Image 1 (cartoon, rainbow, N blue to C red):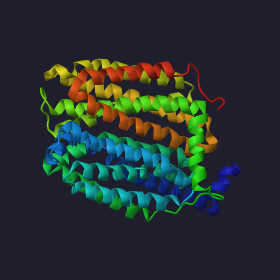
Image 2 (image 1 turned 45 degrees about the horizontal axis):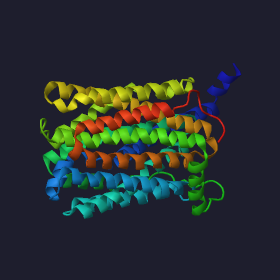
Image 3 (image 1 turned 90 degrees about the vertical axis):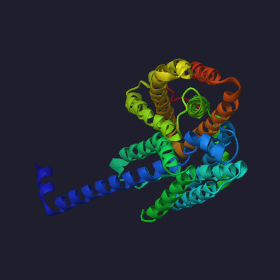
Image 4 (image 1 turned 30 degrees about the horizontal axis):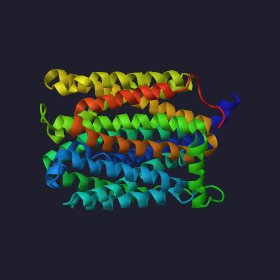
Length: 413
């Protein structure tokens, strides 16, 4: 009764209105940041469905053009290790704006490239700027209403995932309608708009006395070298990113050649299939909260292994090959998302005192592993064909299943 009478007073009504405005503001900001994060991550994957066009324009083979995709992921891996920890030291909004402007400039340079070496160097800096997405995730949570932080984080991560999934479709479409150079110019324009848009968001400085940059890096290295739980999850996550990038780099080479001869826009459309897998895996975090983390991880990797077994038939072409490609992409993406969400949830729950640096260690391993997967796929496919890439994917699945713990991890370092 007292609570109802309090809520009906002018002060109570005003407090309720302020609360509603705060929630609405948080959700609007989260939605905008999700778009920014998604477009930033999408820029990292634009090259994958257009390797054949890139190679033709740069006078190299499609497999050699794969070094552009590798350079992007290497740059992003370096940024994860060297730049993301700065979010614990400098103002996060400004750091994000600088990274977005670096990415925009690099994409303009990439659009003007006429040599493979110049394109690879530009792609390295595109990857460096892509670290903005990993700074946006904790920034979004920090500026949110306390009761909305989980929702905000989920919204931004959804934007990141959608950016990855639709990047190949967007790239293939723009390349088909105009040219691959226009794909990069479009991405550069979006990055600049995002940098300007962030200027209207609140500044956010690190609380307390910020640590020295050297100490931040030493801390990340120490965690990666000495924390057994983090090491295990880094290894499992790395196997996932190797598998994921072997699929997408190899699939581009497979589908652009006989018996498919698909155009970049058609290859890009296969990225939309991954949305089915993402929707299937959306409950992985909820299942983790219910204590089913180990089961979710094992099911995710079992699905990934099954996907690669299906993809054995992808080289057959025609209706059979097309059917297994679609089914394999959906199943592999579901497994990938399940294990990735479980890895992150495990680390954040077990190491709440230094989540940013744990995330840096984990994501650095993933991105470098992804670059290795792309490099291996580009190098091995011309010599050995699709079958060796399938074998790599199956080996990754078996290795991950053997590495997974039998019980929930939250134990000692």
